[in-house]
Image 1 (tube, rainbow, N blue to C red):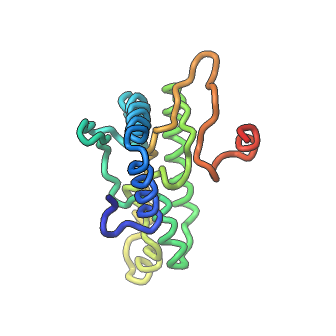
Image 2: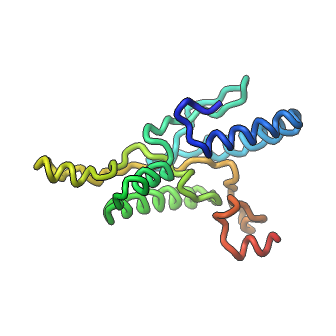
Amino acid sequence: SPGVNADEGTVAAFDAAKAKWDRDPQQYASKAYCTARQELSVLIHLKHGNIVSLLGICVNPLAIVLELAPLGALDQQLKHYRRSGDKLTAKTCQLVVLQIAKSLEYLHQQHIIYRDLKSENVLAWQFPAPFSRAQLDEDGGSRKNLDQVHVKLADYGISRPTLPTGVKGFGGTEGFMAPEIVKYNG
């Protein structure tokens, strides 16, 4: 179940998953197993500084054990900025984009198509807090590590290896897919 500090979206997602489980536990368990197996088949071969590392698996209950992202998902960091009224610096944006691009480049070198890029699937290890730049300026502190960013790509449930003939089918999170893909699938 979600932790005490879980946001509304996390609680709603948990409640929706629990309702599905309660309706048809066998079908949902089968789907969960297939998704976990797919994600493991991708994660087990990956080792990169901007990709969440697989630490292990638990069979009962079925769980994939990954590194803990101390700052959570990038979308939560962006919400902190939006609520505070502060803006990300160009340098912070550049570092996030560069690190995600490096992780995608690595995946492509491993012949893996990610297919689910969104801020919820980017986890943060280091990210500047809102107004941290202003606070350091006032205190006369060092500007050396103001834009320190370390993010990693997570969630490989719908990733697929490429074949010499290409990738068949489409995947992604609804609302994040390109319009031509949604139109084709409709």
